[in-house]
Amino acid sequence: MCSVCEEWDKMWKGYNFRGRPEEFKKTFKKKKGKYDCIAPFSGGKDSSYVLYYLKRKLGLTPLAVNLNNYFQTDIIKENIELMTHKLGVDMISFSPDFSNWCELMRRCFERSTIPCLPCDVGIYSLAYRTALMTETKVVVFPGGKLAAPKRPGRAVIMYKTLEMVTRHFDKGRKKIDLSNFAVTPEMVNQVDVVYFGNYFDWREQEILNTVMEHLSWKKKGRQHARIDCIFEPILNYLYSKRAKISKQCSRLSAMVRDGQIDRAEALARDKAYMLRQIPKEFKEIMKRIGITRQHLQKQIEGRGLMKPLWYH
Image (cartoon, rainbow, N blue to C red; front, side, top):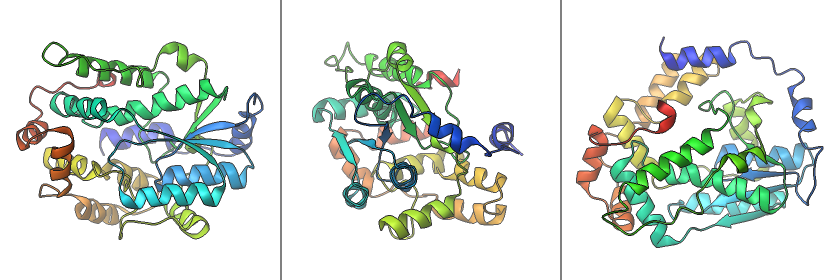
């Protein structure tokens, strides 16, 4: 029984969803513009399900926003096009300046314990900026009892962490443009962020079945979790080497706590998902952002890396 399980129990054990869907619907009564809400959309099963539920089940008009991080897998590109066409929703896809993005990713890989920090910050920033631009009051993230807990104001702290990591290199390299990644308290105060999974019970298998049956959403072989990015195997490899667990371990733990799977199945899935060898995708990552195997080893060992501010 570790802190992950204890934290899950504090938040979700005995959580009552009765009346919560009705409470969720009331969030959209203050509609001003064309859209009821902004829905950050990666093309993965979780964000696809939220988009499906908002549009088909609740009859809302969401605006999907997608961050093109230049690492999207072919299967996820196909799913993005398929989901938006099937659901008939508008979508804004933002592609950052390529050279600026690669330098940003390089710096985070060299300096941060979370090398994919630009993506984490970028989708929050894109969601807030689009909400303000379109006068849409509400942003809906998936969230829920199988996801890591999100606390108010975290997006601002995430941006401050990104700023500290990248500015560390400004004296030796060109100053990097962070204007498209900024998240300020003023932005946060003007938008209501809600987590879908706080209002609707998140059942993993049911959600997977729904998007596959109703939207023809496609898995990547047998894998359905985190298939949106070629960077994911690198992160999974780092988890596997650093902690001897897969990147899916915390989600599997939550599913055990919630009774969705038993411990034996979770351990088997975790073992199957772990990576013991450097994934083939690393060669492509090396070419795109200019990192080396030495940088990868530094990530594994955690030498000279900055922990995110929300850890303190």
